[in-house]
Image 1: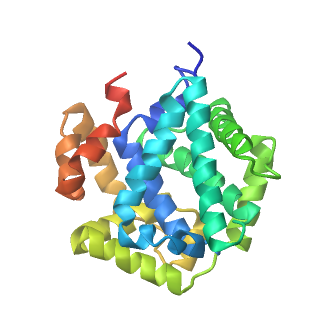
Image 2: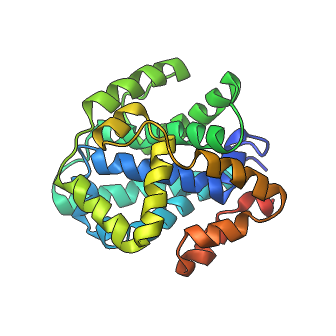
Length: 255
């Protein structure tokens, strides 16, 4: 059977563990709030109404692509394109091409950053593998002017971070929604996770510290996994009503 992502790919290791995925979306949640196209996420009202639910629905699409056979993965990508087209029709405007690129660039960058925080440094070959998967995803979605190589992506990613980010009233409102849905303690943990994985430009715009208080916690967390205590830690950090969704993220333990 042919898969969209090879069964032995580093991308499956990254997107098959709930802890890595949660760090990916911690970083992305910070950056989404700063993106100049964040008003598109507010148009349907679904993101501010249920940011955690939106996170899990987005993850389910990504995992459908990463773990499905090729034709099923292509259908999932096409379904995603149709959803975007419907939103554009309702609003009577087009989502900017750079906004699509920004989302793909985030997925590449935070996949790398989160894995390296929680596991180990990735090789250049592994980073190219990650880039290739999301490049093919973006090409199928019809995203224009994608960089063709990892080096070109790194350069364009740097440009996008400095051109397409700014702090707005959407930024502050989205962070208020994060706090409302997570509660005070979990919200503070989110901020520290964002500080840990976000690029310098994102940290600067959000006035984050350079160093996260989670550094020593991550060391403890790595130890806890060897003792099979990581599930207990996740239960403490994340709202219990999302337990099923969090458990469902762990493809690596089922395959």
